[in-house]
Image 1: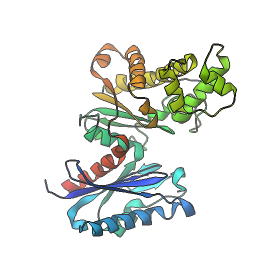
Image 2: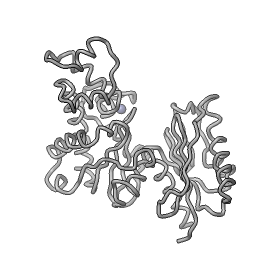
Image 3: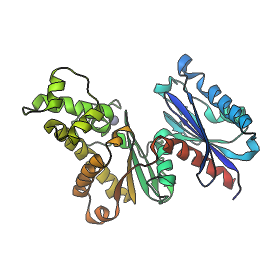
Image 4: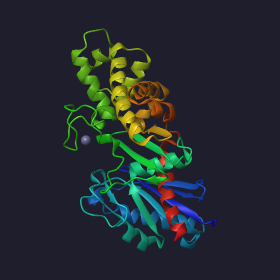
Length: 323
Ligand SMILES: [Zn+2]
């Protein structure tokens, strides 16, 4: 083991986060820049290169001080080729040659993976996963993503779609998903999914509820509002959270039944609902798992917040240490 450092890059639709880390996963420097998605995202890669080079100058460091760079990005990632395609929130419509361009611009090696996978690696390494060899991660945000570490290895599958928990079918003839399928977990348990469930349940609901009154009046609501009102025992909000927890519990139970990880970690913006949500998901998880999984696989909340991605991204560069 050397005392060389890692660089982590977490590329997102609005900001790009950077960190310089030790090989033990301690953050030494951290910064971020706005992601400029104009002109078909053509500024993104040059901006990342410039920001890394600028900060190396600032800290009096050179590429020789680093093992390499690890990076998480939206879109369909080809980790072997170091390319990404279809990152629509970055306006990237054609294949981006991230490894080729960033290695040429920084004179360091680059490893990439998708954003949900690097968040999974981060939580597994330094967060709620306690560096266990078997950890599954689900992120509940604008969409629902996931990542699976099994026997110490991040799973990719034959075409990079392993761990895409957002598209697990939880309702065979359910809501239509952006993927073209019906009844995906994402359509119920993402931030927009929770709002959609609330709207539909409000139509059938006849009882007394402030949430129903708001929806009937055409007011804008958010998933956070639904959870906050459920915590205050609003009758409709309680039913909505129960429905969402049922779908999450069902999906995660089947992850458990299949992989029996030590932990299934729930992260992302919706998970800010905290223990209130976790407990209800756990109740359904226990209903849908068989005894040995129920007794050994635990549902946990993520604890790294928004640095999970940059920490997990940096860990991708550890592979260069053996080379
Ligand atoms: Zn889907």
